[in-house]
Image (cartoon, rainbow, N blue to C red):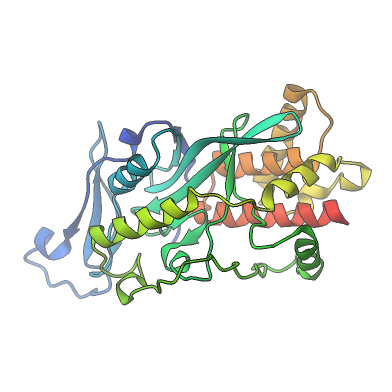
Amino acid sequence: MTYISAQPRLTDSWDDICYPVQSVWLTDLLPDYDIVATDRQQLIVGQINGGRNTIFGIQSADYAIIPNAVIREVVDELIPQYTLLVQYTTTGEFSINIVLPEEFRVGQEALHRSLILTNSYNGKTPFSIQGQSLITLLNPDAMLRSSMYRTICQNGLLGWADHFDDMSAYQSWLKDWDASSQKPRIPKNRPTPGKTSRPSPGIRTIHHSELTIEVFRQHLHDLLGEHLKPEPTLTPSIYRRLQQAKLGRRDQDLLRQLSVPAQLAKQARERLRMEEQLLDVDPTYWLLYNAVNYALFTSRSSLTLNDRYRLDERVFHQLAARAFA
């Protein structure tokens, strides 16, 4: 099925994404018709503020909606102080960035620790926290990755190296990583101490089977509560390494070699030049990574939010491998 091209919009208000959403059964809407297509039995309808009712998708009978309002309730309960930044599309995809007060520096820039949650009403972007599905995170071997918010571009950075215990382990993995692969082999998570609960059958296919809001709310509360007790991770050190790596003559065609569509690469190049002037610094791998991130998450494209996340992480590893070479 062709996917509508959409440009993410930006908001700092929960109200823009916490409008009422419900499922409407085709049998109720068309009582005089026999519905033969049993794999599509309910419409996902949102009542967008100031607009008409919007049909985001037609889903199977066991599809469960996760309202953004429930996510808001859990976040407000656990985090007394945060800044909200949401990217969303008119097609019903949401990237919710919870920017925390905690910060660290990369060069002259201050970055803030953040939580990124994704959700959708069209089924294109499954619910996730820091790029990982709920079923993955409920496994005792899983850990929530860290993400950072960069004020200058108002985007969350999705490149992670949190799976690794130290720099040498990450460098060793990069050497074996096949950069030409469409699906890079991301290492397994490090075990999270004290985490023993296994996923229950009701949670195994969260975005494709019935799930009560109460069960979802409890799991989300527990996972976010764990993540708010941070442990040091490797990712900030990789960011600093990228910041120290200057772009030179050998990097003139680097953007063409990255796993980014040509049009987005062109926009990334323009963003790179802008940041060089804005910050009055020489171009670095750090600025290039952020320029690609900016293009991915602000430009019109047929890519889903999930596609953009995967490309962002892939580019992060590609640039890190080159910086260490």
